[in-house]
Amino acid sequence: MISKLENKIAFRYLKTRKKDGFLNVVSIFSFIGISLGVAVLIIVMSVMNGFRAELINKIVGFNSHVVINSYGKISGLKFNQDFDKLVHSYVETNYGEAVVIKENFTKGLSIRGYKPEEIKRLPIFKNNKNINNKLLGKTIVIGKELSFDLNLKIGDKILLMSPSGEETIIGNLPKQEIFEISSFYESGLIDFDRNVAFMNIKNLENLLNLDENQRNLEIYLVNPTEITNAKIFFTKNFPKNLVYTWADLNKPLFSALKVERNVMFIILSLIIIVATFNIISGLTILVKNKTKEIAILKSIGVLNKSITKIFFLVGFYIGLTATFFGVFIGVIFSLYIENIRSFLSEIFDISLFPEEIYFLSKMPAELNVNSIILISCCSIFATIIFSIFPAIKASKLDPIKSLKYE
Image (cartoon, rainbow, N blue to C red; front, side):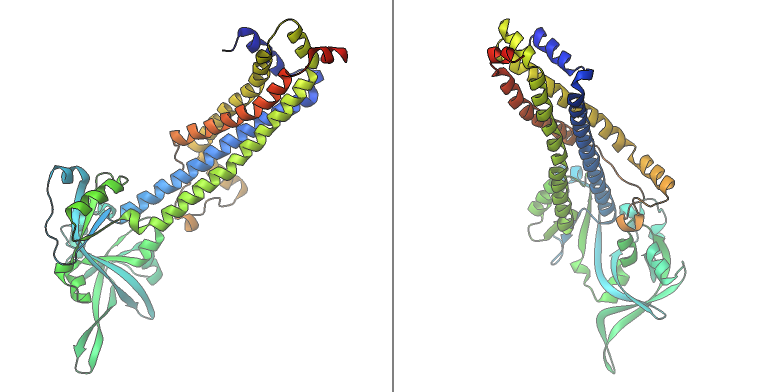
């Protein structure tokens, strides 16, 4: 327990006085260093969490959450209570690749085929109520970015060449068909918009010579982030089919993001550790300046452990208040980071978060309570460690020798 006397003396030593000039500077730098370290760590972790969340939203908004790959006809869905809890919707699909030809321009294109009555279940088309009518006949839906690249508008026609051949009197030739552009889509990811198109599943199977018995099942979950349990459920219920998820398809990307996040945490934690080293310097100077007071306290019967507590509390209070101030600054900055980015971009006329590089229109930030608690605990723990040694040294001073040279 900490007594009132120990607390009172510790707070007295925290008050700045003119004769403690250099000591005050060291204490201020300790406070500022720890605060900045905590704030920067919270801001960076928030931005990285936000970037990951935005990336997941973009990916799961465009791709299905679970795919059951059919090697033969799917044996049938298990419509039970667990299925209904997990699944929001599902669609049959088939996909392949073709070459789009427009005048002198050629480009490889990934094509996904859906039934007209089912395509509106895709999250990317949830706001397009007439999308089912856009897949009737020889039509195709392409991304806006691709339309800009090829200078296309709705109603234009493009030639698609299939890698699957067809027999003619002069031999085997690639199959070619003309399709009319019925609509554009915009996913928010430029790579997808440039390289993926949608059409009627029957037209796709006819163009690419695909078997309708080899169709895949795309499943959209109620909660796409709870992907691990969902994969276990579908693997168990469809043991003869290959089951994979959006997390499997993007595993290298999210693994890299996780590694980068952990490395950034370690590197930025060094700012806090370096700042807490100043506490050792400050307490050592404080002990040297207060040698006479320490000797007097010991002479009137104050125990060594009380001396240790007094000087420990001085360092601990500096670290604790600096940590809380850093958390406050970090949280406020994270909440208004987009406004700050926009303000700085306008003032200095520079692009701080270019959309063409990051594929995001604004700087994302997502505060995570667990991260904030972890950062605060690390900062306070470092403060405790670096406050103990000078405090123990203060308690070991010999009062007779101290008073002798004063």
